[in-house]
Amino acid sequence: MSTGGSEARGSGLELGVLLYLYLSKGYVGRARLAEELEVGEGTVRGVLKRLSELGFIERARAGARLSRKGVAAVEDFLSERLVSKLYVEPVKELEGGLAIVAVLSRCRNPGAAVLKIRDAAVRGGAAGAVIAVSEGGVLRLPPGGEDMCVYLKEVCGRLAYLRARRGAAVVMVFGERVGRLVRGLLEVLRSPHYELMIARTTSGSSSIE
Image (cartoon, rainbow, N blue to C red):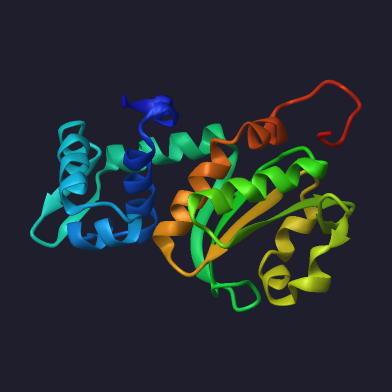
């Protein structure tokens, strides 16, 4: 892993640790990281040592937290994937009751490829994922184009500001544990189908076949 935008090419576990710390916004102990990311403490110890040597984290008796350099690296990684906002929140309407919400500044409608993106989240350990794209003042669910507000009224209310941003989107990776959601989100963000969804296009197509 190197500094700057090339964070995307770091190992999955290193990225997972960085994202978990970014979402936690404070110190996290090694045992908790190991439990959440479902790896051994020895493995986590080695990852933290490397991240500390690179200057991405600060370590104390309370655990590890992101340094300014670490925050910048994570935000560079997210920016490359057009994620303008990322946070965790309880979502009673979705299985597991918890979601990582990623707001995208723009994207193409993924069409039927949305199923592959959901599969990526599940492969990472999440219960599933919801993707909605702002079109015509409505947050639409690909591939059918249903209004998300019909199914997820509470969530839709909190994301109402996105409806006015044509081409903006939200990806919600949901489940029970933040660690699994982080892994699911990483699978989504590194999926070739997600890459196509956020790719600029000069053609007239509005969706990915």
